[in-house]
Length: 612
Image 1 (cartoon, rainbow, N blue to C red):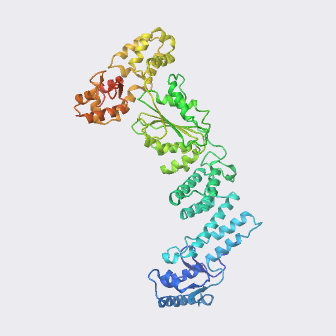
Image 2 (cartoon, rainbow, N blue to C red):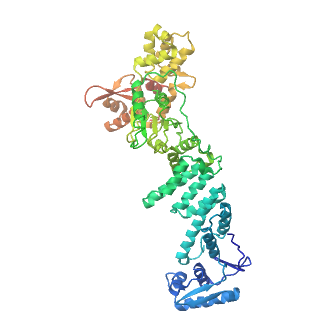
Image 3 (cartoon, rainbow, N blue to C red):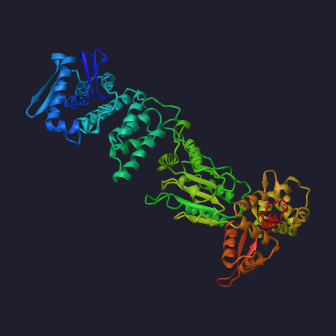
């Protein structure tokens, strides 16, 4: 059915601000009360409206008198006679009033006639229905009686028209997808859905439109907003229909496309399988026990449908101890387990500017196939979309060098099919159910084995004493041993004893522990920058003691601190991995030791020290 707007010479319009036109030209309306009386009568389209109701709607809570109503009726009649003539009449019937107008002269009546005609369209081609309903929808210029007082708009007839408007848009959305032309309907459906936040059928059509336009990320975000709103404000879950639309999008069902694959993502039916974990270390050695612990935890119950949440594992320890190397090694061993891919991010927690969760989420979303223009701006929306895309997929997320829990939480997937492996110098105590592995320096044998793996076992066997002393001078720190190994491997003619001699010089040691882009000093500097000035002063005092063990009382005496302050400073230095706790074997009594490489770094004249 096609609606002809020129059916009547006069056009009374309530689908938007109240307006009356004659042959397309706007007619001046009567004064306020007669005008609002006209609006209410037009809403009811020839039905009798009781006098009491008219008084309440037009005059509001300060109910007007019958004299005021009859005065307004008289003025409206005069306006109708002078403007419309005999074609319009305002009748008093059974204690109320009814406005009679020529058929088809009210936009709301024309709209409803088109909607009714569409309900009986058996055998009518979808594109013809689409054209007829689009023509009907053009009657709408805005909300019903926009700008009218609330009393006038607080009418069941307004709500009924709003519901009919939504029904029309829903029908059009379905038709537009069926004829593979969803894009023109998307802006109007989106705007109406924002105005009707709890209209689940309308939001379901919007989800389907986004998908049909090749915008799956926005389809999933629309569902997530709807789900959160219903849960937070009504305490209910989305309807079966809305959930079915969500699962169709999440499953990347090709029929949803309707031929409209776009550049908003990588395409339907071809889920992106990210493999972002860096290359494995060829000469990885040691760490067999912690590797087994991590593999067992991250693979635990992966096929168990009752697994409550994503498994979290953390690797903590001082700079250079091999946290990142271990995480990458474990991630590669788990590659066949997490068949939907692996996400990786260097969170830069020890750098000057750690990565923001929003920035990392943006990268993850793009890695999962979301186009740049479809990535939400808001952190919460990014996190919600990320969780939706990760749902029911077996993906391992590796978060390297985290500052702490606050940086990591938005990056945790909600699906129990996923797992997360985190590395950090912080101890990561804030994650429930997490398995945290505290990585320490190698023992001498493992450190020598690493050196032999890099430079060849024959060179180590030729100078076993020099090799043992070398790894001790490296503090058995894997990074330092790896640097020495790289330097020796590049110079096959160097004896191990020569490098050992150079490392014995405490003034030169940190300079020697550097090759290419690897330097022990960089990690020490990052850790040093994260502690406060007062703790730095304590650290400097302890460094001057030399390579000795000390007790809490020593710290208080040497640094001029009371017992409480000395304990707080020691806790901060232990947390920063600058000081190690030495168990004396006596209950409740501990000794402490400053790491040798940390001590040399603090004593370096080039290190900035706090004043005082």
